[in-house]
Image (cartoon, rainbow over all chains, first blue to last red; front, side, top):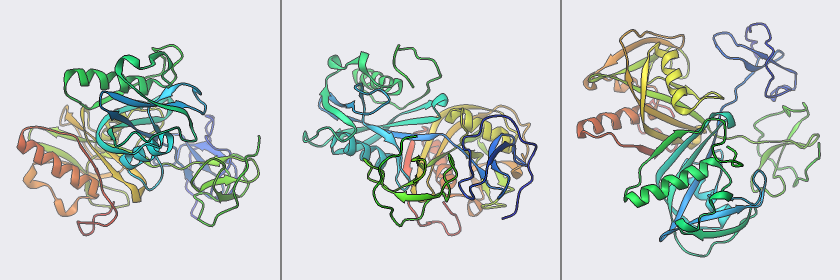
Length: 200
Length: 200
């Protein structure tokens, strides 16, 4: 493989220690024609780009209630969340959201409109939630959940919601429902927790 | 590091050959508690997840015209595109879209509402476009562009648009503008090109 010309090595910490293509050591350099430091292999010339990861989930609705899952994994073991997880290779955002709902809550949903897209730059993630219609009440905890339950608005355990993106999505959902119209909510959640104990 | 228990190695092709944490060989296995094959390191136990990557861009508007860039890089060298590129670590989708517009077209924009979110599962990407208002006419080709120009609807070089996501976003943009209302367009572009010669 042709080796690219690099600028001198820089001192920021690489994401990786070794090249996943050839196994040699990684240096942090600015590739020719680029403006940012990247993980670069000095042996095979490969540049290893790192990008934010999409998280996809649903807001499963049954009448006036919505479905939440109690987490059986870290982070935020025991806290409540909407069903959501890392988007997989080969699926769309909507199908990923549906799959996560099936996996975490054993729940079947009809996925509806996109409801929220939340940027969390410091966590290197985008969280994407779709409105969804729960198709039946035959749900239950998947391997990553301790419990799955339906909550009316006045039953939501706000102090025990796992993530800011979930709390924000729920707040917007109930506000829109009171207003009679579901909008799209695109916002950035900067570092620093407005709600104590709720990360990301 | 604790080694995890894995199922027997499976035969699908790993994304990586070597572990980026310890440099050992990668096996394709289904980790305990998972349902999918992952790149797993048999030496240090690390699991290397791979997820779809977000592409972010803008539709820069100046009066009745929009800005397009002629690509100076592969793929689709010489074809026209909206300014867009891979989202970087540490930025939001909107700021990434603004940065790409600045880099590819040396153009300053005020980023507006989210306009399209296009899933391309076979390319392992999500393309996200924001409406944007061009702030002045002091633009020009960045390092990855041969040319940058404004186009009215009847001047769009439809046969020379670089990507299906861009063609789709432009079609929806002009249709919405004729209708007097800009909506949100969430759709999946499956494999197989409806427009000959236009990949992704």
